[in-house]
Image (cartoon, rainbow, N blue to C red; front, top):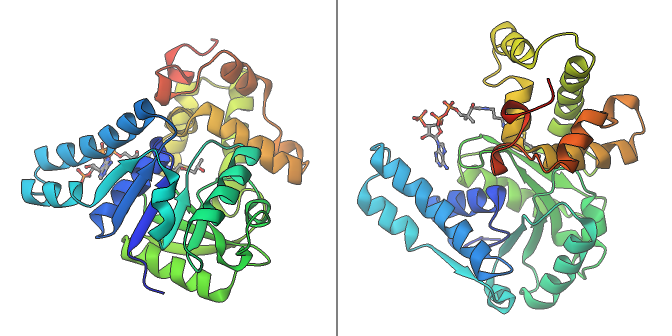
Length: 285
Ligand code: 3HC
């Protein structure tokens, strides 16, 4: 199936990055949000990224103009009827995602793919509320979506081979390398990454080293571009907590149990870079 029209639901960090990447790669993109303020924010993020790339000389002004012409924002889900692929990137709440999938299933043309960018929730639970389980899959991008080269394609027990092949081709057309994972909590990357970040928090909580030294250790000792605390702030402490809780629910192994400090940070409203308060902006010393 040839994908031409792409819909992205959710204009947050991930949704806007995915929409940007798809528009840059030649797709006709529709970005949906629940209210005008959030939609404006999402569209501004996309336009701001192209402005930054044009200022850096990475793209021409003419290219930026062309990209802008390929993306449009909407508050009206009915406009998704002609989409060939819809990517959901709303908050990590299963009830909300299921409601959205039910709505999309009733609107989007039959045969189109409905995909979720969830980092750890079961895709089959979203597929189950639709009448097209074989056309539902996960398509998990990494932050920052326009830059990170990996896309995880997550197949449920009901996803068809055709859907996996269509999504693989789509990811490649965005310049990404797809890997295929089964529909188990954390898929491939977060199943390995989350316990690593949680271990770093425990190490700090137990007073074994400073955050700065743990970060320096992993950057200089292992060549990681960011240390675990920088990455936690970057990915979002709330996002990390939700992912850890979802994986722990499926694999009640202590390695996946969110440390108290992470809970307290989120309870205190410290979400990391997204709201300017995280481990590096006032964590308990
Ligand atoms: N669109 C296009 N290009 C962009 C961009 C955007 N929105 N934002 C940044 N870029 C480009 C920049 O132009 C720059 O290009 P250049 O190197 O050619 O000049 C390049 O990306 C790097 O940007 P910066 O120079 O601003 O920053 P750094 O060199 O410090 O790199 C980083 C930043 C890429 C974020 C790097 O630190 C990194 O790789 N960090 C690790 C990120 C990571 O691990 N992400 C995965 C998190 S896990 C996850 O997302 C899963 C979830 O489910 C939890």
